[in-house]
Image 1 (cartoon, rainbow, N blue to C red):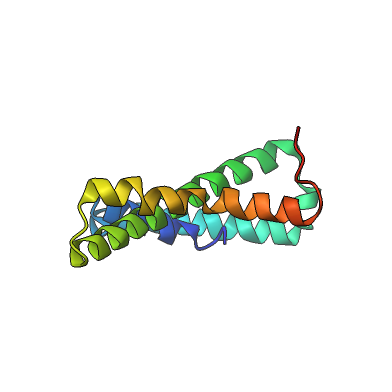
Image 2 (image 1 turned 30 degrees about the vertical axis):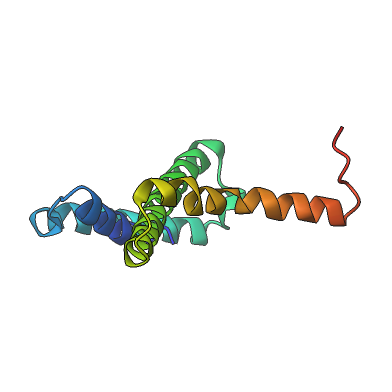
Length: 125
């Protein structure tokens, strides 16, 4: 994933920030070359477990930034999709935001709470 992540970052920047990738192909080529080289070096020298801290931290931070761009992109498209369904069903945006989107935001908590209760750990007091 380190090797192809510059392509994702270029796509993300072009769609979210209106940066023309065609104007910056030399940067994309350099980023891909550096990423492929870094990935090859990591694989060659025994994987991430054998890297020193000075090499692991930048890779981890880069992975965090790439993951954050994925979350932003997917979240924005899910909100657009729900707004589209709300428009089809003629539900006003404030009602969609207060109900459907709020319910979706609470699904992670619901699944965690149900799992904890099934394991007999429901008493958190």
